[in-house]
Amino acid sequence: MPITDQFERLPLSSILVAEDRQRRLVDTSDLDDSIRQRGVVQAIIVHRGSDGEAWLVAGQRRLEASKKLGLSDIPVRWAESLSRPELEIIELEENIKRKDLEWQDLVRAVRRLHSLYLSADDGWTMTETASSIGLTLGAVSMYLRVAGELGQPRIADAGGIREAYNVLARKEAREAGNALEELLEVAPIQAPTADGEAMIVAVPDGNGGIVRVSPIPIPSIPPPDPIQCLSFLEWAPKYSGPKFNLIHCDFPYGNEVAGPQLIGAEVGFYDNDPDLYLTLLKCLCQNLPRIASLSSHLLFWCSSEILSDSPYARETYKVFRSLAPSLEFSKFPLIWVKSDDKGIASDPRRGPRHVYEVCLLASLGSRQICRVVSDAYSSPTDRRLHPSAKPEAMLRHFLQMLVDDTSSVLDPTAGSGAALRAADSLGAKVVLGLEIDPEHCRVANQAFRGARMLRSASKGLGDL
Image (cartoon, rainbow, N blue to C red; front, side):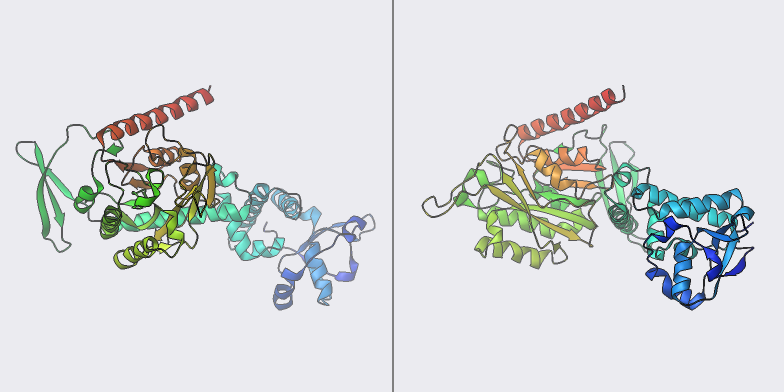
């Protein structure tokens, strides 16, 4: 029978409370308004003493709120008339109020409690569950949402219910952005030609017509390597494939006076001069609609001068504002501190050595992050694979804020491929890098494949 089907009303003064309960501090502030307006909706539970008196079993907060509001009586259920599910409800309600309950157990208890109420009464609502255990409707809604995802390691390992819920909310927002992008993209229609060596790509215009028809080669084997030997300046204006929701840029900084230790990803191939820096930056911004999803992030490494009111900083932000005004920049940059003290003293007579590099974080479509991380990371330099490579550990630290299994990552100047290896280790769905030098491209792909094989071997050993 439904737990609220049969009850009687007893005077408040006739209900006895055990001494151990009387010593507890009972907060009823979140119940007072509800009981004042609607009375006690959910009956308290009592059992009969040896002389027939009514002793409180569950519902002390409702009892105390009724006393505080000056009510004369309260609905009660006798414990001996309860079914097994109803007895479980009593136990759950009492456990939920424990202060030492782990948040994961609390979430499970609230879900089980709500399920039991629903099984007894099809019309039962989350509002009534919230009232029965002294939580807000928003809290119960959050608990039930998280309860269904406790099987996910990132949720179960969260530091608290709010952190777990935020992880879910951010992921749902990212997935919604990806879904919108897929809906808005026009899928090409592909058909092989008679000779089988090329195919016609026809893109509908939305009105039954065709806006582009072009023959392109049919590759016999899809390119297996995530890093392609291509120039970003040539690739970006022609690209027409799936878009990326994370773009990691490590262009040469264009700061000639700083020397080679402060330049970006393409030493010796993309010249380190201000003109080329601006050319790459403008190419990125002009082609952003072509390569970036409507909901996406941008990581943009740059000279530490970006933190000053220098010509470099003014020109950089001027290009972003004029050519990519939809980018929303985070107020604070990400900072890599070189723990091995490597850097350049641009003016050794008047100033210190620069041992940190700066990365701007921007988003399109207010894309949500995956998790919160610190905005500074200390790590030594690592130039074993490339003269200006960023350390993979540092990149993984920052990328874990943005990368999960919904991520498609582009690195326009991949260099050693460290950012792509880091993203792949975090479960990115797609990674693509461009590297202008054939030898660096070969080494980067070799390192990428090696990292994947090592993870696969480690996982196999862990399953033994």
